[in-house]
Amino acid sequence: MAKPSFREFDYRLRPAKRVERKMLCEAFRRLSFFDPVENYRYIGFGSTTFADFSLIHKTLAITDMISIEIRTHYEARFEFNRPFQCIQMKYGSSSTVLPELTWDRRVIVWLDYEGHLTDSDLRDVAYIVMNAASGSMLVVSLNVGRYKLSQTRLKKLGLQEARLEKLKEDVGSDKVPGDILGEDLEGWDMAHTFRRLIMNEIDQVLRDGNGLRSDEHKVKFQPLFNFHYSDQAKMLTVGGVLCEKRDEAVLQQCQFESLDFVSTDATPYKIEIPVLTPREQSYLDKKLPQGAIQEAIEKVGLTEREIQNYARVYRYCPMFVEVELS
Image: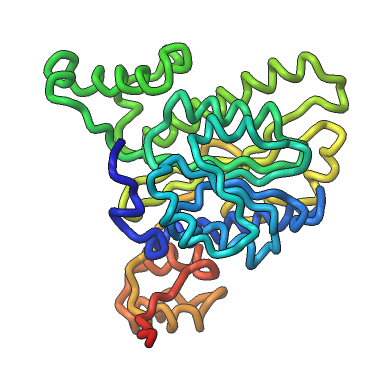
């Protein structure tokens, strides 16, 4: 097994990831029309920083929390870094742990995977869609950086065919539509392809399940998130809410579409944060939300695109400072 990413870099220092977490929390809060959000269960992968757990617990007051950790030989580190007693630790793969949980309450599940899409990931998605209650939220994050392909595979197949073969190997040939090509696994096109495969899996599970349900209990999946961003790696986050037909009026009350980062189709919301000094960031904050782009261009020296990218996400942006603790 490859070295875990938490030994490579500190997740707390990834600004786009931090912005994404805060955006998701703002959306999660709107689930309160289904049920007070503090009554939800949160399921995720805490790793050693538990960054999402800390934010969700502090901002949403959720106390029923489960962290799934596949790397059991790091158990001591996970236990030591667990920030709150209300976080239950479950060790094993998500495909093993998820079926062991009870599904008698609404859940927010964030499957924040480190790698590319696999058949195991799709099985996790399918299991949650089959078992989560109406009003539950499912979010999936994946690495969409380029595949690492062996020279042997490249020489035998060529780059594009090698990429396509790797995808079929990872997710199963039956999951890959015939019109997907190797070119669809290059750059951000890989994110579009992975999202398509996830949505296909969800649609298939719902078609199968809804055939056995009464009309009012038929379930739909409302897409809400399609984030593209790059800190150390290109990442995709997709997600949405599961809703029975009888709860569609409640879903409308949530007004997710009023959040400017929500995407209900294949159009990505790109989190692009310019590198700013604390003084530049503070200056722009004072000018927003209306902004004075031309003034900032002349006074600060930033480009119009940099200012606009920051203006889109400034409410969620961290400001990093150095603090010495004695």
